[in-house]
Each structure stands twice: as C-alpha cells, then as structure tokens.
Amino acid sequence: MIADDQAMIREAFSILLNAQPDIDVVGTAVDGLDAVARAAELRPDVIVMDIRMPRLNGIEATRRITADPGLATRVLVLTTFDLDEYVYEALRAGASGFLLKDASGVQLAEAIRVAYAGDALLSPGVTRRLIAEFARLAGPRRAPAPVRADRLTDRENEVLTLIAQGLSNAEIAEHLVLAEQTVKTHVGRILTKLQLRDRTQAAVFAYETGLVTPGRIDL
Image (cartoon, rainbow, N blue to C red):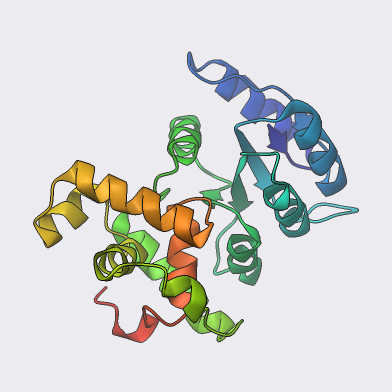
C-alpha cells in the first residue's frame, strides 16, 4: 500500500510496483488517518509511508498500525533524508526502515521485498551510520529495559549487538564461527523474546537500552 498526500507519487509508485511480477499494490492512502483505516481494511504486507502528511503524520500512523496486534504489516518510511529528526521517531514508532524519495523503481521494489522478508533494509555501513547518528541526535529516550534484555542468552546478546552494527546473518555467522541457519534461529528467538517486529527494531532496542554505544561503533 502507498500512503502519500501527493497524487503524483501515489500514481507513479503504483505503476512502477504493479509492473513487478511479485508485487501488487492493493491500495493507496491520501494521509495518515486514511492509511490507518486502509491498513485495517486491506491488511497489506508492506506500506510505503510518507512522513509529512495532513490530518495525521506518517509517524503517528506508523505507531497505530504497528501497534495493532492483528496486523503483520511492515512500514517503509519515505524521506528526503537530510538527517531528518522525524526518521528516528518513525523507527521508534515501529517503522522497519527508510526509503529515499528519489529511489529508483528497482530500489523501491527491492526495499519492499527486503522489508517483507524482515531483513535489514540498508547496507551494513549505511545502517551503522544511520542508527548511530540518530541515536546521538535523539539522546536517551527511555530507560534501559533490563527485564527484557535479561531474557536473552549470552549468545543471543552477542547476535543482537552485531545486528545493531548492521551485520547480515552471513557476516554474523562468519564473525561468531556459526552456521548461518544457526544465526537465523538466534535472530528469530531474539525477536520473539523481546517482542520486536524485525531486525531494524532490534537495532533500535540495542542502542536505546545501552547494549550498543554509538560512539564506540567502528564505522
């Protein structure tokens, strides 16, 4: 589903995505309130969500959609990306990642596929820079959550730390000398134990609870 207050964006994205053999645009929304209503009605796998929209912005719309236990929808946030403070807020609201408004059709389609799969939306280097920068800009937003963090085994904490640094499953497997399938199992358990939606949310959790310190990340 495409949520954007600009008709040209909605139409252009719909045409580009419907041309993909494995993607169907099931609907569009003209603002945040419309996005929340349409998400409940259409139950899309992925929503491409603009941040700045009338009536209800994309951040609050994302928060409402991802808070609905009956929806498994993932949200990609549209941004011009000049270190927009709203992007970090959107991540905290439950968005699965970023998408630049000037992205090509190929990049847009691939971002949707990756979001649907629950994987990292950006290259590891970019992910590290983005999350670390927004963590620095935002400062402490909430108290650490030791109860949730304590649910993880030592190995799971290791994997979570590497996820927050932007490593893929294959890179984590190489770093920890594990089979990639074993890493996938650890990632699944981490998300389940911490009640998180995907790897992006796991990275945010790791920074906000102090498991990873942005200033110490080797970029």
